[in-house]
Amino acid sequence: MTDEALADQVAGVRAFNRFYTNVIGLVHGMYLDMPYSLTEARLLFELSRQDVTAVTDLRRVLDIDAGYLSRVLARFEADGLIGRQRSGADARRRDITLTGAGHAAAAELDTRAVTQIAELLAGVDRRRLLHAMREITDLLGRPRARAVVLRPLATGDLGWVLQRHGVVYAQEYGWDSDFETLVAGIVAGYLRTKAPGRQAGWIAEVDGVPAGSVLCVPEDATTARLRLLLVERWARGLGIGARCVDEVLRFARQAGYQRIILSTYDVLVSAGRIYGAAGFTLVRQERESAFGHDLNAQVFARDLTLGAARVCAFALRCWAAGTAGRHAARLSRTPPHRESCIVRPVLQHCRKSGQLCQQSVSKTSTCGERERWLCPLEACRFLLSGLTGCSQETTRSSRSRTTTSGGTSSACSRSRGWRAMRRCCCSWTPATPRRRWRRASPGA
Image (cartoon, rainbow, N blue to C red; front, side, top):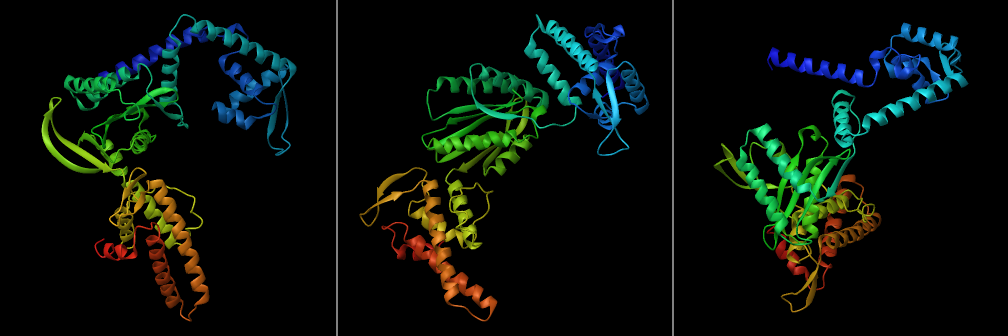
């Protein structure tokens, strides 16, 4: 930034300060036409908020000089507005209380301030004004907890999505109007497609202000596509992008999709990290000229049935740690880890027997019998209940057969538990004989 540009910005801030102090009457000497300065009025306001206030608390809240604060309090005491006494908890400190006259003065100041601000808000765009004030507070104030809400699309939201995509990508990446044309086509296609339960969109709000967006649209009968993920620069770092992607994945599973894909570019580094953390993998990439730049286009995909596999892997880890009983009713989303050599045979057995299918349907097995394909939730319940039985059986066997060597006992316990787990897994469906398990295990 050049010195001239900085000087212009400083001058703009100073001009605003002069304007606003004149609007609220701070240049008149006395605040709100009462015999108190702005600092004295603020002190009375803080004192009226609680019955007893410590002097040290006033100094900390107002960041005021100790000598100046002492002189103002002495004047208040002389005017009969406050009373001062030693603190009951620490005799070295002083506590302050407002007298009846002090409460009356604070109430009068509050009434006049409310009247002044009400007159200021009359005839102006209050939404714009309050939004600008929140922006200034967030930028210059201390970091605070912010309310993040993810809500479905409402009337007018897609117009905001189109406008913000065009502005944000032009400012941050220098993309031309071709990108805005692309986004307009996506928005128009979303509006034309009437597919209840198969497509959805969401707006992320921070303290009631739109801060991000995402869409889930159908690609084909079994594949969904994630589109138009956006997070405003001022709202980044709050986890909004990850929440939007998680919501799309949840909706896609409920809608019955088996796979989800998305298109992006390698320059969108933060978005790529979010997709990777959500379990997406890069399936292809190629160079292309788009939006006035030479870009590397990427396509990511994710198999939605992997979520069930990870839940099953979590259940197996609980069993291995001896906590399957404690977690028998818990369904937890776990980060995508590689399945160990013990987990893979069980998951392959589940997949081959149809217990990790996306929806609950029925099919005829090779044996001619009817067997039920379980949805991920049901498969997890079966797995957890089975592993709970394995843990109990292993515990009973360990108690009845003990050895003198701790290592030998542990090895025997693991071996017996593994055999018991295999028996439980093979008994989940009557149409899945044990020999199918033996054939599945070596190829895992």
